[in-house]
Length: 281
Image (tube, rainbow, N blue to C red; front, side, top):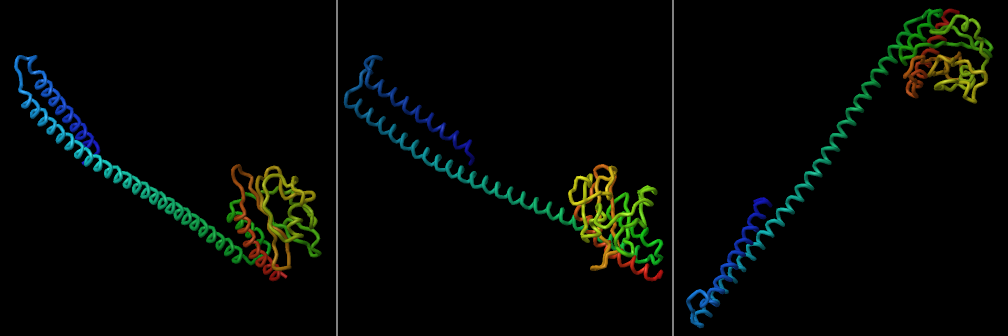
């Protein structure tokens, strides 16, 4: 039974009670005023008739009240059941939402893991390319192309220290003008590359390096480079140079993760460059 049916039954009981009351009142009026309609009723009979009608009316009222009470109780139980079901549905909906969020998080983690695995595979391929090249005059170019492919940059350079470790010079570059290559002789401590060579720490930059107070005479970034990474090439305390990578396209920027990848690659590239240099000697 639903609430609509209960309300209909309660409405029917009220109508029933009204009809009974109207009949009772009508009979009482007839008995009490019988002379007005052309007949008279003995007083004793009138009393018995009125008493009987009153009893009938009382019984009808008691029945209606009892029935109405049961209907109200049933309606109250139905309301409680509906509230409980709504609460259960709400809790189930919350659990479903939590499950959906958990599933989305799992998918996100799986997607991130897949990306990381692909990037690690790319790092392995890049290191393998460097390790497979033993000719010193091609080693730096191979390493530069491999790391740009790894992090998605479109220009870069490898600068090595001279024998006295006072100056850096470009030994390999992509996307850098020839006159810049020939004219570049950067002192350790000056500019972005000089700072990285001096302190042995990688750095991530966006925009114009001239705005950074750490650098004097910044040269690692030009106005065309929107994002750059510069990492040291060293093995322990043995520093051989720096590797600078850049983006020139819009809506492309390096991140901390790219810098970490380039740093790891730089350590392997340093070993390969030193090894090939030793073999050449």
